[in-house]
Amino acid sequence: MSANAHAAVLVAVMAAFTMLLRFLPFLIFRKGRTTPAYVSYLGQVLPQAIIGMLVIYCLKDISFAAAPFGLPELLACAAVVGLQIWRRSSLVSILAGTAVYMLLIRIM
Image 1 (cartoon, rainbow, N blue to C red):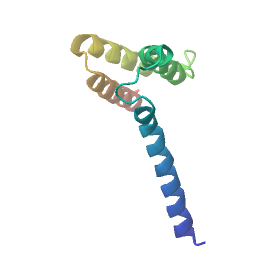
Image 2: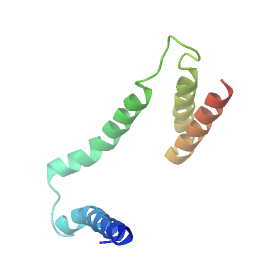
Image 3: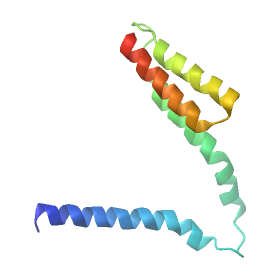
């Protein structure tokens, strides 16, 4: 099998599994069937838990002992929190926080 054919097969298999995983909940929980309580509970608590874990992962390597002492990360986090409270738009908060962080790491 050539390298191009091998790559095409890999992409096709990954696409098929991705589609299967995206459509599976809709196939399992069709209209007219009740969603189990544990699935509803997970739908309520997992988004916040995932965001919390991402924040911890992103901030775990901050060095407060060396310049710039974690200032870009903390200011970007403050920008995200402030914008989220003010605008209530996740997209605006994340994009602005990313822009603030990128600007600060370039100038510090």
